[in-house]
Every structure is written in C-alpha cells, then in structure tokens.
Image 1: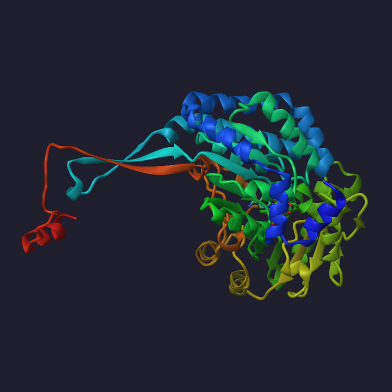
Image 2 (image 1 turned 30 degrees about the vertical axis):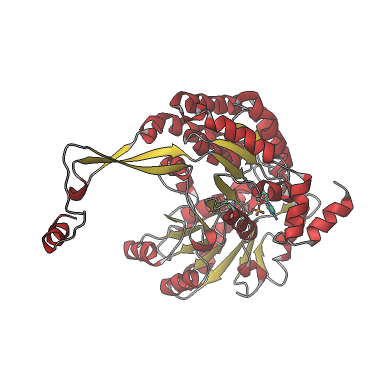
Length: 481
Ligand code: NAD
C-alpha cells in the first residue's frame, strides 16, 4: 500500500464509509469466506472426532513450537519464559485439555421438561455450530487472546478466520506460520494485518464475531456486525478497582497486587488499575508495596529478566504522559526507545487527570485514600462497570457488601487475576467492559446456537387450543398452561 493511501485512510475516521470502501477494494475476503462456508456445509466440522483431532493438533502445535513462541513473545513484549508459560502456553494447553475432557458432554442434547399442554411430547436443547466465525485478537496476550476463543470455536464445530493483533507482530507472524502446518486449512484461515484488513474482514457476513480489545474499536466492530445482524462477543477493558481494607494482611496483599499489576508490565486487561485504601493504613500499605516490588523485581527492574516491556514506543509515550503533574512515590523511570517504564506508584492523583480518566494499561498504580469503605463502593459505582474488581479484607460483612453492591465482569476477594485460571467460571465484561463471555463450557456456548427442539406424537389429539373457542376451553387453558 502506498503511503499516500495509508495516510488518507488514517485521516478518515474508522466509521467513515470511504475508509471502509478503500479497505474493501484493497482486501477482498469474499473468496476466503466462501471457501470456509463451503467446507462448513460439508458438515465435516460437526463430528466430535474432527473437533477432537483439531484440538489435539493445536496442543501439538504449541508443544512443538515452544521455543519459537518464547522468542516471539520476548520480541513483542519482553515477556520472560515463566510469564509466557503461565499466561500463554500452559493456559492454552489447560484450555484444550478441559475442552477435550468435556466435549462429549457439551455436544449432547439437553433434555428439558415439557408443559402439560404440549404433552405427550419431549423437549430438548440441541447445540449446533454457528458457521464461520471471525476472531479478532489483542496484543497484550497475543497468543492466548487469539487461540483461547479459537479453542472454544473448534470445540463448538465452527470454521474460523483468525486476525491476530498487528501490534504484536512477531506473535502474529508465528500464528500465521504455525497454524496451517498443524490444523485443517480448509476450515481455518489466519489473516494478518491491521485496521484496513480488519475493516475489510468486518464487511463479510460472518456468523459470529469475537473481538478482544478496546472500547473504541469495539463500537466499530458492533456497527459493522449490525449490517449482517451478526452476533458479537466483545471482550473489552476498563479501569479495574482494588480496595484494600484495614483488616487485610498487608504483606500478602502487596505481594498479590504487585504480581497481578506488574505481570506483563501492567498490560493486562484485568490488572488492578488503581487502589483505594483507608487513611489509617495508607502509609503501611505503601511501605508493603515498595517491599514487595523490590522482592519481585529487585532494585533494578530494567535489568531484571522477569520485567517486561511496553508493546510500542507510542504506547510507552501514552502511559508516560499520565505521570505529568502527579505525585510519584515510587519508580517513575522512563526510557521510551527501550519501551521501558519502571513499576510506579502514584499517590492521590486528581480525579479529573488522564491517569484516572483513561484505562492505564501499563505499569503505573495510583493509590487513592478514601475515608470509608462505603465511599469506596460509591466511587466505583459512579464509574463505568469494570472488567474486574478486587477487595482485600478479612471482614466478612464488607466482603458480602462488596459482592452485593459492586458491579463488575468478575470479582476476586483477597487476590488478583486468579479467577482466570478456573475453567468453570465465565469470563467477560458487563456494560462498558464488554458483552458475552467465554472459557470452558461458556466458550462452547458462545460459539454455539442452542437450538430448541420439541417433538410431539400423533397418539393423542387435544383440541382445547383450537377454535371454536368456548368458555370451557378457556377454563382448561388457564388450568393447564
Ligand atoms: P489492539 O490495538 O490490538 O486492537 C485489537 C484488534 O482490533 C486488533 O486485532 C486490531 O487489528 C483491530 N483494530 C484496531 N483498530 C481497528 C479499527 N479501526 N478497525 C477495525 N479493527 C481495528 O488492541 P487495543 O484496543 O489496544 O487493546 C487494548 C484494550 O483491550 C484494553 O482496553 C484492554 O483492557 C482490552 N483487552 C481486553 C481483554 C479482555 O479479555 N476483555 C483482553 C485484552 C485486552
């Protein structure tokens, strides 16, 4: 693409038709979708054997390419092997294992009861694949966020187009190279690229779009999907709050917040975005946080292999700009060319400053002192519904009030991020943090249509619903509905 063309596309907003038209002209994915739809129509993907074979193939792909995966994630995000193992490879292997273990049960039709008026008869919910689905991944966990929904799409028997994030270019290229070597190329395609390719893909009538990323593009995806009445799952982000109550064990709390926040250099959608503390423990909490930071990342995080890098210089600049005019009580070192920002604590930022208006999605943690837990609940509820909400407390009453009063996609008491590891729990946002959910059976459901099937017999004919209507028939209808 020429530079002139690319600039013209940038200037025209993502919502404008001319940008969309240019992208469609340049990238036409009609043939890709037609090919996948044709394959779907052969019903090869419907069988349990085929689904299992593809899941086994993905497990093998991850095993055989471990060294290349480590390298790609290190290049993209400075991710160390332990983090790549935990949050990308082992996470996906566990996802696949869980799907393989349960797929037979998930695929089974579920018998439901039948009301008297429809008897004799039987009722079922019969899960069927949706067709060809589009999965658009994000850059922060570029393997996990592209392949975990893909595991669910395969388990549910779909064909798929995967669009990994161009921002994590090494991982995107690796996915595009590995996948066709192991999985059924008639059922799955990887499309690499950014806004133009995604815009062109979004013009196609997919049977489902699964998007992970920010709110702005989430709206673009939903607008495009409405043209074809395509259902969407939007896995978005937001500012996830974390309350530390005065009864909490501060050392353990600090260890767990430091792990959850600075994993992947703060670029985790469910990471605590800011902490709310009561005045009487503010200083002790700050000291505990400094100790935990030093214990986990040493005095020199920049040369510590466990500490990652920001995805791009542009994002590094965005995050660094949030520090303007703030009271930095720990860290604050910035090296834009190296894409490095040290783990940084900010005390009581102005609530109208960008650090408290935007999702940080980087290694800065504001600590805000509020006089009471009730004011903390009100503070959270005044803002958009977060993807995750955390509280550290030993007080059972406060714990139940938190569950009852605070709205969030997921919540966790006395730890950070750990709910992600439980395949039995749904993962997804609420309100501005997204719609739809996945993981485990919820992922299977996300990529299935739950088809209603009712079966009746000819052995008995009940005419009370037929005209001519009489008051006796109305009486019976009222009794037996
Ligand atoms: P991103 O820039 O990687 O974009 C996501 C995808 O959208 C990419 O594949 C990209 O190519 C595509 N895209 C970008 N601009 C587009 C446009 N104008 N039109 C069509 N497609 C476009 O990711 P991001 O938005 O920077 O991701 C960060 C956000 O994602 C944060 O808000 C974070 O909280 C959220 N997130 C959510 C989850 C979750 O599971 N809920 C996970 C990770 C990140």
